[in-house]
Length: 146
Image 1: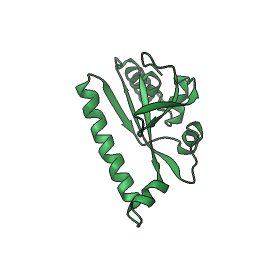
Image 2: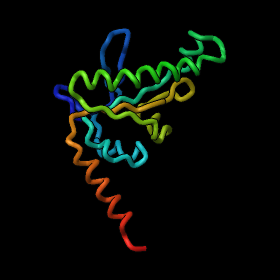
Image 3: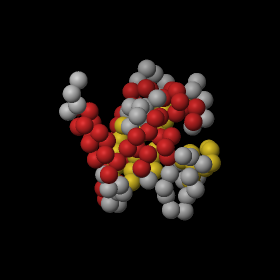
Image 4: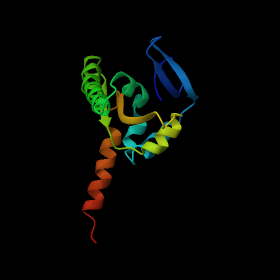
């Protein structure tokens, strides 16, 4: 997407080394909107984060039926913290859970037996032009004669 010093691509955060590793080089930002169920204003984001959950690790750490619940709570905490950090840095944020999970799982090269995408967090310094254009189109459709 659009981050200074970082080539467009799909990256995975490696927490044990606090670094990004390349999953796939190159990424056309026009691909993002369709993956997010036609939320095409996402195409202008500076960057996006697909939040995934490793179920095998959750079940290892919490060997009972509440492991999935803990994963959802963790995602909720992250989803609340992300906009706070973005705001502190002067960046706009945009969270959504509306996406085509099987296509994103393929894009991220996830082993869906143990891991799946759960949420999306987007950020950037947009001027709102894309959203205004989309709203204008919707208003035009709403006022058309049948």
